[in-house]
Image (cartoon, rainbow, N blue to C red):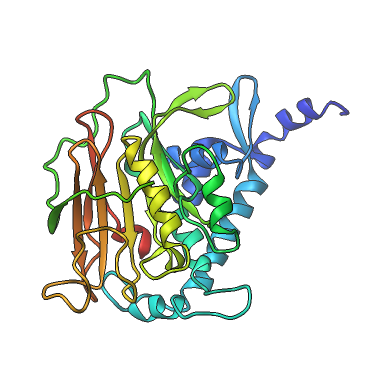
Length: 317
């Protein structure tokens, strides 16, 4: 049989699997699988009008995911929430071109956040991993400042425009530790997440971001070599009116967000925090948590009056 299409149809059960089968094999939701397809991690093919994925690609992705996770966790996390020993190790300065081992944690963790988001987001939203607002440190600040356009986030969440009848989470919104006034300075390449306005298009995902999510890295914190560049990037993103979620697991650095109490100098300050900058209200929700405390559930504003209470502890564990 010389026709590859006919050969593939006859051997579908052996070489291809459905989207639902791939989701079950990877232990993620159907939307998370669609997100992997959108990012080019998996390839979708159509046979007799039905969508399928290549079995070998799914198995290879599953293998690489397990390998990355084992590299990060030699043993099960013995702490509730953040593993302080791991995070201290990741913040240890390196030498030469490698300033630290933090990027080895940053990329896989952002991927887990994206997958968990896609499991709980309403069907008309999708989370996508994208280049970060941050920089690693190999590109000169003046070169970065000269680049035009808005920088992209770690993860993007899109809203599907045509699905107007489906509501997001309606349960009570979670309460932050404190709320402070938003202050912006005047106006890295790592990975991140954003929640975008999502349109199901023939050639991929298009739309405007609904939420940007950043996992902060040492170089972009107060005192870091690229702090000012990151401040300019986040200011431009917030000025565009898009909520920004910043995840700070770096207890050795002051927060780049104004109003977050300095740990350990300030009473009642905590080692870790997650902030949600909400440009529409001109406020920042601050969620503080410490060692041996679960990573909090955070209120994430979506489109209009919709929102999501998202548990950040799940992706970390």
